Length: 109
Image 1 (spheres, rainbow, N blue to C red):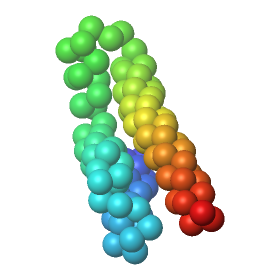
Image 2: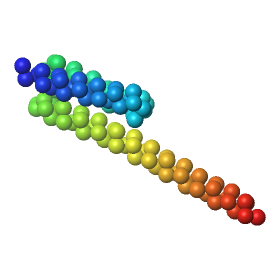
Image 3: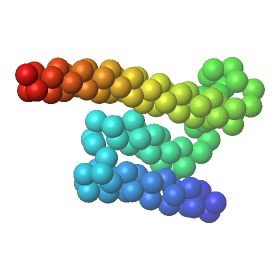
Image 4: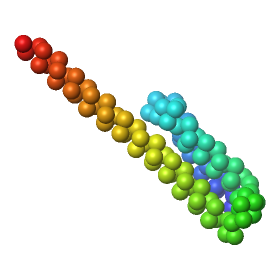
């Protein structure tokens, strides 16, 4: 009976992500990994002992440690992708600012 709460929370998080995509507040491309995470949350809440089997398969003595490792790796992956996008956007902003300055200088002459 305890699992029902985790299932409800997982389904609500999935619905929330899909809702944000449908309202165009979150792009499909950006939400892909969050939807994958929500589906994994649903699967783990329906089959809670599957994490134990994966931990035994990977020779991890404490199964919740595997869950924490996976969550940390997922968040690091998302952070890396976002950092990469931010640096790309910063380069584009600098380039646009330089082009704007050149065009303004040409307009003055």
